[in-house]
Image (cartoon, rainbow, N blue to C red; front, side, top):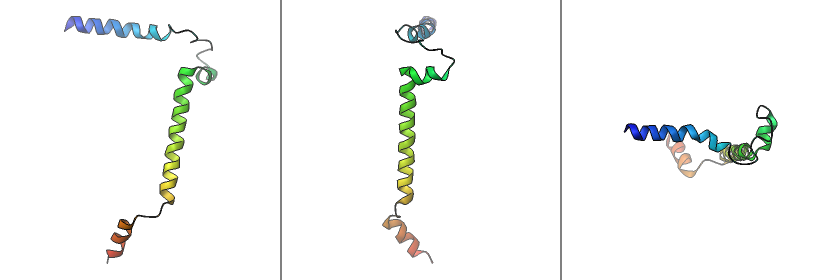
Length: 80
């Protein structure tokens, strides 16, 4: 168990170094907004998050405009 934990800790300690190993990272200053807008590893999640948000808003608007289904109307009619 101790050996496994030691190996896992060593792999996790080296994980951040692997992120900096690919070419092209760090071409912009990481403390600026342009870094998040121009680096693909930041831009792609931002675009996907924006698309997911737009899809959620579109679905909500469509549901708000849709008439209630027949079952809901039937329940409302039966109320005294």
